[in-house]
Image (cartoon, rainbow, N blue to C red; front, side):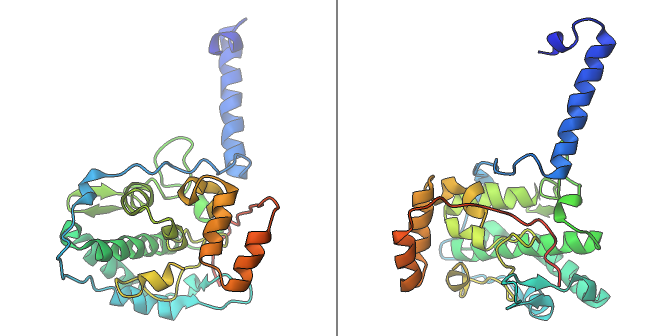
Length: 267
């Protein structure tokens, strides 16, 4: 195909390729290229190790206090908001200290339940820190710190070092949480700092509360995690709905439509 484009003069060919690359970049920036091609869940074998009898509990107190102070729950829009502009220097330092502590945890010595809440809280705390580090920003996709020509957002950047391993947000979601737990409800827990995301909860995840807290375009992007079809998505929704909504979903015969709002989830 490159030879066909370049047929005639070599200069015209390279100009054509350059134009196509420029067009692709512009489409990505405009959000015209669909985001439905979510990364595949590929397990990272290093993080499969765990201690079933482990009694160690990770202290998420700093993160819990941050969330209780800055997450506005029960917003009229139905989307929890974060008061990024109000975060004090002291609380930013507390968040940095929390992330430093979590990077010092021997994760492979935790039991599986404790590991799960560890990775969820770590993901959400790093996301909030990234936004704060670049605030004000209209969308997290504008924080282009991921490697790669066509990459956008912070998700591919190796922001963490844990047990000698360089770890990114994409690693946590697509190489650890999704493939190792195979619990599609984790999509309700990890937050991407956008209005279209599942809500950032006003409390930290722990071994004790995770089951209660784990109860959008998420079903479009990760449909494979919910059975691979719209029918299976509806069955999943029925399973966790109240009786009235479950009945309505069971009778629903239409097509599911999706939308995603990438604007930052700020107050």
